[in-house]
Image (cartoon, rainbow, N blue to C red):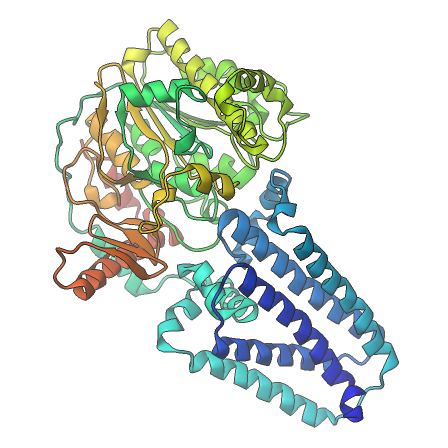
Amino acid sequence: MKRILKNRLILEFVLIFGLYLFYYAFIKIKFNQQFNLFYFVNDILILLFITQLFRLIKNKKIRFISISLWNTLIYTLFLTNCFLIVFKNDIFSLSMLSQAAAGFGMLGSYNVFKAFNIIEWILNVSVYLSSFYFLYLIQFKYKEVERKPKRNTLALLANFLFVCLCFVIAPTSDKELIVNPYYNKVKAFERFGLLTYQVTDTNDFLTKNIPLSDKKIKLIDQHFESKVLPEKDEFYASMQDKNVIMIMLEGIDTYMINEKITPTLYKLISEGHSFPNMYSAYSNIGTYDAEFKALTSSMYYRGDNYYNYYAENDYPTSLANVLSEKGYTTNSFHNYVGEFYNRITMHEALGFENFYSVEEMGYGFEDDIPLWPDDETMFRNMKDKIAPIQDEPFFSFIITVSTHGGYDYHRSYHQKHYDKLANMSEFDDYEPAFINYAAACMDTDEGIRFLLEDLTNKNLLDDTMIIIFGDHKNYSDMEMTLKYKEIDVTNPYLIEKVPFVIYNPELSSQVITKSVSQYDITPTILNLLGIEYYQNYYYGESVYLDNPIKPIILGYNNWFDDKMIVYNDEIIYLDPTIKNPDEYYSIKKEFVYYNIEVYQSIIICDYFNQNKLYSEKILALK
């Protein structure tokens, strides 16, 4: 026993394993995750392998620094994953490194201390810091037990082979997650644990640039072989030649739409075509995913920021590119930093002639940007760019930003809205975070009110179709969202509902209860403008078609239609009229996987750039 206690290699492993075990157990308990013995053993083998690698370092100081860096890396992954689970229900992947600058820039908007209570903070920080003390004792107070180099090499190789074997003999049901952890990162993380998950994610990251197989290219070719024209519904061409203003609301949830906080949005929803069953198909990779789905009716479900990787692609089917070909001027607006999510480059690829970021808007935020610039100022100062008086029709796409989370901080530049809320007795008992959120929503609403006023003054309102939709739920404060939003344990997707309205004075008030999503926005706009298109270029379809809904896809293993709800690859709801549930599930799952692979592969291989002749045919349809 004394010999073991004096063996530095064993003590190093005990320290590294003990630290990891603490983080592992902490996450499992805090987030109520299931324990899996098979992958826990695999994590132990990975830790043994790492410990044996450190064994190769003979210099004590370098070894101390190396192990300290390893422990810091594990602690950083622990904190990062806890923050992501709490604030975004997401898990870290190496592909997120392409968004590191944006991620750190946004960190200040969240109160990261809310991720843990005070006891949890003291516990995890103390364990991490104490590891340096124990590592110092191990390195400088215990002697190295000599082992022959050949034996060291054999032990290292054997351990590596055992780790590889674990992946080979893994349960068949897990093979899909092992090869493609982004199919469901949260599920993969819970199933595999921190280290095994990270190995699978690293494999995906290193192999992401491998060219698509001929089989996948052929799959895309076959998808476009047929020329499927959509049905014409009762609203086809009802907005022909009208201007288009499309507004994506940053984080404004459905429970904030009312006469007191957002009277303009409430009025538009009451008087226009409203869609109470609008679901956000946004994935956790970023808000830009919601805008991409709305502008292209396409999808991408790998973990990386495709706005960085694929901003030089051709997107001839995007709404802006199609409208540009039809004679529209196209401009986009976002009163935040232009390089954020690489929108400067991506919006050009998507067909916008100009992308106006906060740097180009010139109204005082360039040198001293507040936490989140206010939308009202943007609408007022950019009014003649958003709604120009000209002979050609225009398409303006606006991404708001005032309501971006978090909401733990008082925003002094919204003071006039705080004053209004203070005079509304019904909000006296609401928590400060709600009041901060409400004041931000009021700012965005005031900007939209000014837009309507400006359109009226320019005699453009009758000739302009306005589309407003939310990007995602308020995930910045899930405690607030769970408190105020319609929740039903039988349908986990109700929380994903967001506002959606189509407004023009010629459209009479109508509530359309069909379940729709951001995939449907571009096909719907083309339908209303009377612009014909091939249905198989887009996943979504016109919201006015009286068809059974396609599965609304939120990921490989998260989707639903009017007969089945699948959440984390489990059937949550099944229509009792389905006689063969297993067959229905298999058919729908194959349909979901097929469409993700097709549309995602189009982006990965820049299909339309490689097929210029075909790309030109897309826009030739009259």
